Image (cartoon, rainbow, N blue to C red):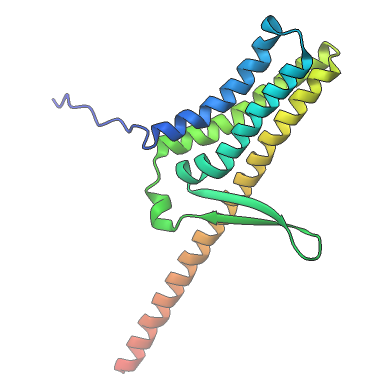
Length: 183
């Protein structure tokens, strides 16, 4: 009998994971608990949106690149059209990405959006339009990251498929060439 346990995979980037979760949790916690400590809607709005904006920046520019190897941005071209730009690591680096880091990244990204939607529903039920504005801003920032990283992941998969197709085609053609050159 072998009692040896397989090694459990740890987070490869614990600090990045910490900050990825920190600003999401801070924005949600401050929004939920602020009514107990503050009477001013302005303070609640400013601090919650600031924490959510910090979360947006950290996810878009730091944790997305480090935890899942993806980066996106949107720019306006000379014709005034919105153009999405994507970057991803090469196939070898993507294959070596830590599964736990990736899992944490995607689940917290989606779960925080669900939490903001639930809080928005509560604001609607309580007829608090001002708090619905806070939720709307935070949800918009969160959904922008979801859309950006989802498009980036699809683009990365397409690039991997194209690379694999080109590699197979080039190997096949080189095999054919070498077979016919012998004859």
